[in-house]
Length: 280
Image (tube, rainbow, N blue to C red):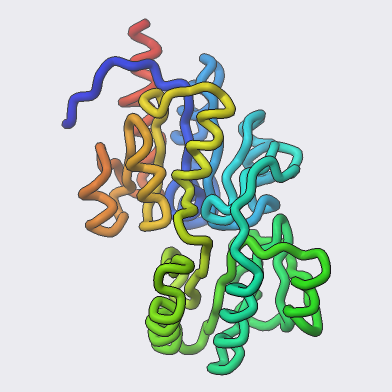
């Protein structure tokens, strides 16, 4: 096992789906106990997700989170009451361009606008998002009009539940059209591809929180299972990849733990946080 300097961990930050949450979208008892034990000894805890703020509410309550949470893959940072305290939105013209491209080929665009989802149709594609604890979307007749009148786009997802090959082809189109202007991301669900502001990640949002709380990155342990977690994992003093993470994520992490269904987060907390606290 990799040796780490004996620095007291002051902050735990974890991705949700595939990491903190098991296949039933719950926190396993061992992991829940380890988190509560760490929090009880003064360690801070927050979450970092690609989803909207409403998807974090139950966990904020469950673990009494009192510091900011990271949402939208780093495009928004919210206070525990939902207030946006930091944001990196995607330029409006890029959002409209991607929406036009998606609609032309039969992809379903969904706009992440703060805590809201905007779409023109409530179909099985959007149903997949709601099943993953996203809020019911606001259905609007025209996304261009909605985004030109008060809603600010933070990221886009472009979906096609019934044709994953179409999603792959559309990803290639997005990467070509938006090269150097925006980042194209695939993580999690095979039915969607994301468009985000260039240079914005969970890691950049974490850097904002660390500056706010005056915590050095060396005193952070971060957990994730996919490419959208990699920058956050690399910035943390101890970056932990889940056992089922892709090879490139596992190879760049400081430590690889078990899967989300095998108490991976809980076991790593016992190894790197709780045992050290007990020794003190």
